[in-house]
Length: 457
Image 1: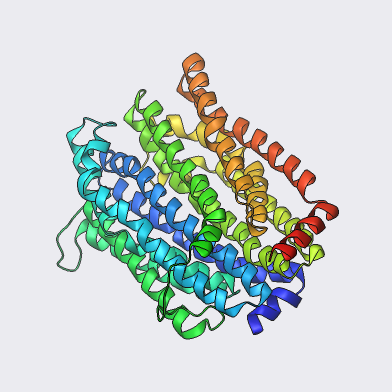
Image 2: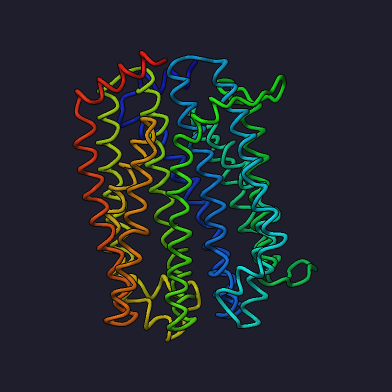
């Protein structure tokens, strides 16, 4: 098939960008979900921005589980397409969608009964509490859209149809961008719903992306047939999905745990610090989402080459991608250093937030290039079917090193020292990733791994 030939014969530099560019654009647009929410919510008042910042870690956890399942499906499908096993491809796609549905259910139940007890751990301010509770409950109870979209889009990506994946993601994001001001401020005769309106706009966008991805798979992705006719649960398929998917979930969930812990630390100083960190995290998604799109292009490219036992293309794909990531992140670091006031101005930052945020953005930006190398290396190993290295790299940079360092720095030097924990953690995690890459990707090791895989198959 045409998309299989592209993954097999297109020159690697051209192939990486052919696969990555639509992923980067779609994830760049998708990052506007949280940025646009934050920009419009900040225009209500700082309490509203603080409320969505407190809710954001739970949203990140939902994204972690949904993306983990989707990445596991993507990795399995790309390797199976390389092996040209059509019946297993269909089974993997349908079991992936089933797994996404099952994973969504706990969040729906928690959204119905656990939102207020959770938020009571972080704030006693009535205005912040009520806004955060209404926003988070809507996002959780109606979260099915984000789970189905994540898997449906990865089915498209696995066969090289990243342009179709971009269409699905972009449709949802643009819907959210258009509906945000309409529902938050009450245009066209609709009531002004404030923070609740932002949540409704978000879930409508997620559902539109889910429906679009399923339609595109059904109509235009013949390499990955999506049909529940004769559906059966396959334990072996599910194990293969979560061999990569579960470490990816843990990796993604690290961000949620990190933000929860940082919010708790920062709230002991001021709510403005929490509001700033929420603004920063939304800003950095505008840079990190394209980085993840570039890095995730390695999953189908490396996965297909791994299935086809082509060592040279595997190594070349990593080299091209890691160099590209370093350039992108260097550009992002320059922007954060040069115009921090302008960036924070999008969130209606007052003098107090600017006092904290301008120097913080410059300090944190030191870490960006190191992050790019670490993220690309992690997804490279995911494409080879090993999600544990990606998971441990993320644990290092977001939990094991970052949080203790941040707590120690603030305890001895105050809140302005907390931000140095980010470059410290990223540099050490990057060093770990590079050591593992050099140890595990020599030609001899790759050849042995591929031969062993072929024999086990």
